[in-house]
Image (cartoon, rainbow, N blue to C red; front, side):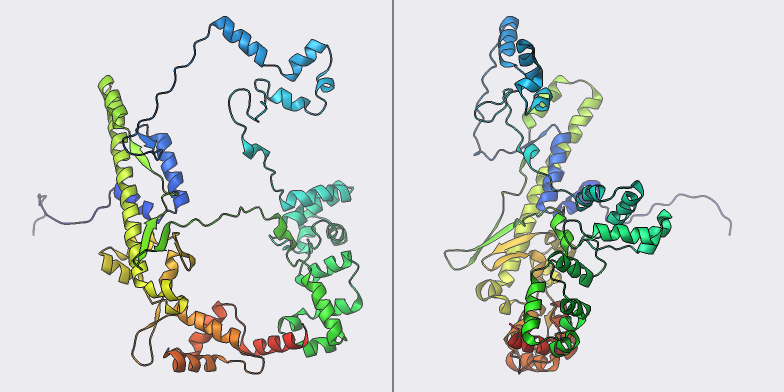
Length: 501
């Protein structure tokens, strides 16, 4: 068969994601904070976009008053009368600035063109930036190095201190080996240990410890409470964790009253002293959707419009600029800006409609949870919701990611309502895994010291009371996920609470 070039035509169908479609999909999974940052960047880049001020439709903003025209002489006189900084005043009195303003000479030099009025505003008409007066939280490393520079006299010891400070974790524990520090710096191990002993007296007390017992021992030594009995107690904290108090008292050599006093002393200590310098900001969770009970007994679902960005397309500005320009590149730029602005407004509207549609279906299926509590939480998957609202499963997943719903039962992440199903023993309705976990916690919290429930017993109770067909391994897995100890440890804990408390 001879090979020869030829032309062929083929007709195929394929799904191609345009850049704007991919961006619209990305907007679905953004939280309201990330969405506001994205819109803010678009507002800076696109001159045809403007933020909606929230006024009523049809309202027009009042025309600004024209600025008052001043002559050059009047403006110069007014400014010369208003601007009086520390340097000019000191020159008038023929003295130094420190004699006129002994407390704030540097501040006056920094702000020579502004003054503070009686109401706290600057003389140039701008309000003061309060963020400039907020005290910055010091870092743990900076706080410790300030103390180390005072405690240590030689540069070599301070270099060792810097390496030890860099080796601290967030809790304030030393996460590096002293031998490794000595080898890396070429120093004697005795010198590194001496520096470490000096640093263990820094504030907050307990830093530079290498274990929990050492951290507690440093704090007790600072209080002059580290007696031999307390030291033996710190050596056997593993028995305290397992609540084997009988063995613990024999190892320590104390009675129940002494043990209760020492445990009360330990509760006043901080096992993680470095947490006080945690620089991570605390952010409050703001709901994206509100669910309220309506007057007819149903549920009303609405978006939190306070956190959603609202933008408008300034078509008047586009028309006026387009009429005046003749450059092809400028017209192309304006056309791209108009298309992007139209896309953004439509995408934000579609995102809001999709969120309210998904949230309404979640509320419809979880009506029992909203009315009666977590015990009535139904099993629900992303596919169930997607099939009912005629959307793709991935779309529902993106809409519910990093989104929160405020309900009469509290504030929940929208992913919280999607749980796996556990079959019923009698073939009835399936049970939600979250509801099963809640029931397991209730059974464990209600047990007494003389009637501790094992995992097998809990599985039998669930099957007998509610017809939940769950295996012992599943009960153990749910219990461990909730950080609930085993029945042996719980028995020791409850007995200990009876004798020591």
